[in-house]
Image (cartoon, rainbow, N blue to C red; front, top):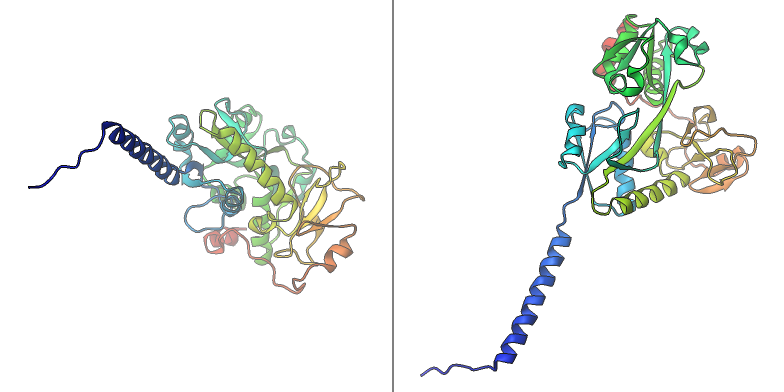
Length: 341
């Protein structure tokens, strides 16, 4: 006959309690290991944001930033019409390329601007170089993308005849076809079109005397998201470090950047040995903080300061002799535009 093993009730109770605690701890560990990543969205923006393998500066840049910051983030690219509502309804935790042009952002926690966006008026005609303010474009037809036109800032500018376009290509085509003598676009996009034009031996665009508007790309997360403040702080700290040591240059395809690294009030030049060549002109440097350079500006290569351009150039190892960089705009797509230039 089989015998039953009897245990005192106190032992069974303690063992059950221990098993329950162990299972609870295990479940908590599993939940932490499989916690959902923070989901951030953005709408497609040529040369900046893409989900189909096209050149995308911000995608490349933020993948590096989030990895170095130790943040588990999933980036989603979607139509602009669904982006804002997806954040408001909680389907997304925020936006990874938020641009504030007067919209209500009271429900969002915003990072510092990690990539400024300088909006210039550009034209085939050199007369645009005298334009300094929006009123100087009064009664003129100006091509613009809907992403900018459909914002509070630009809806108030009634004196300009905006020629709205759904895409970057359509806005550039307005200029190519002479349907609009001016185009309002970001400096980096205008640069890419000029590279495309120069490589095709076409006359390049002229810029307004200065940016007519300045904004920038920010990380934006819902205020009710758990850990939102910590996430923004870690993001900002990582961005600042990467900007200073030149880790922004290669993802942005920019050999020289400028920023006030040492805090003396003047912007310094920032390069990186992975992309910067001694032949790269300082005139093409792109500002990360809007501050001007001066005779006191230093030159940082891979995070190391140099007092002169010559010293900085001596530390660079890339060959000076190189073919012109290809534009981040797809030449096949823009071939029709080039034929109309």
